Length: 561
Image 1: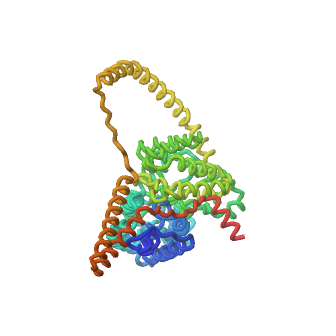
Image 2: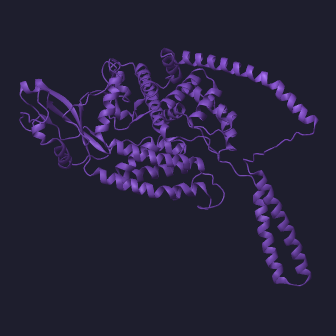
Image 3: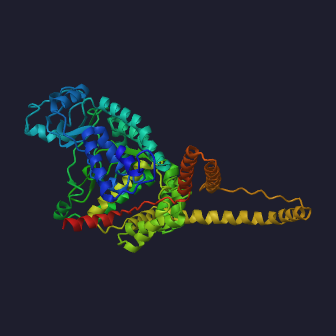
């Protein structure tokens, strides 16, 4: 926090804003990354959340924190075994086979491979040759079922609650150093993070979300979601169907298996469009560790601990946004962002229109011309202190999904066209036709209201002219001063009057031969001159550099080559 404050203000707690180069920002981000890894599970999760929040952190921080994976050293098996047996009973009685080496480790839990007797009644012991035996009889193996057992880390609840208290106490200090827009976003981050991490520790909720999302994709052979095993799951243990697959970002292996990576990217985007726009419930942690691809190109989803819901209002606005993007209607895009609450109504629309045009060009997989980027940078330099973007808490997980899915799709196909895929989906689902019908209906309603207004204009105009003829017309004018021009003018007038008075006093005191009083008056005059000078000095802008996913990725590839 001290480093962040030092980068924003020249003298830490006061003074002009300070310019910081990209190398310094990146160094700060790397130090933050190491600190989060050292602090443990809760702060690793916090770093993952912040990596999808460009409304809170500079691009360099986002780039560094995006590499933060949910991987920590696994808990010792005896500790994990105590949790497992406290919830399900003795391991050797409930499982035919149980591999004590975790196949996946995360900050809040870890996953083990096991086999259960598919014919056993839940709660009754099964016949087994021992928990450490790799083989069993032929008859047992034929009737067993492969499962993945997710066990919550021992004592993680107490650790998370203690860490959340630290975050809660630290937040007011951090808010002192940030502007109003980032303060809005940070408060939402803290509230959302507390809610999300508590939900992620509740495996019963995860099972419900997994089952609901699985039912929404029932019959769609493009996607595969594990089934929850009843009788082996509760709030601290979640047992699911075991499904193998190639990690979705293992491009070389996918290529070797002959899988169409572009088709996989298209299906992945379509799945999240369906979850967010149609179903209203979605898998919110689509990083490569939670996505795999089978040999026939089917996408497998893992880990539904971080999942969310979208209300109907937000769904409607997201549809409006995507339809506007599909139609490349920049005004409609900005209107949708303002109505959702993501874009400040006071933002410079001309500048933001340029930003959106470049973003659409990048999303289509086209190269962004550098001179246009420089032009946009120049336009936003003068208004960078008024940060136009903010993120309501009900959209935070949606933004995380959009950001991470984009990165995965670009990894699969660097030239993937997001807008084309979204446009096809909206057209197939009838959203674009519905938007046209709605537009025609609203236009007809506006024409009707305009006709009614025309019939009322003539009598109102006649009454106004009559009052004007009788000298009985008054006009009330209100002046909006969002830039505090009048306050600045008043300060300058006062400083000018004080300076004039002090200079006059210096002359009088000098004539009266009062040297000490002259020195005091001179010191006062100097202070007033400094204040007057500062009131006229323009605020220095901060140089920023837009960061585009495709370009940054290509630059990194060139650097690696």
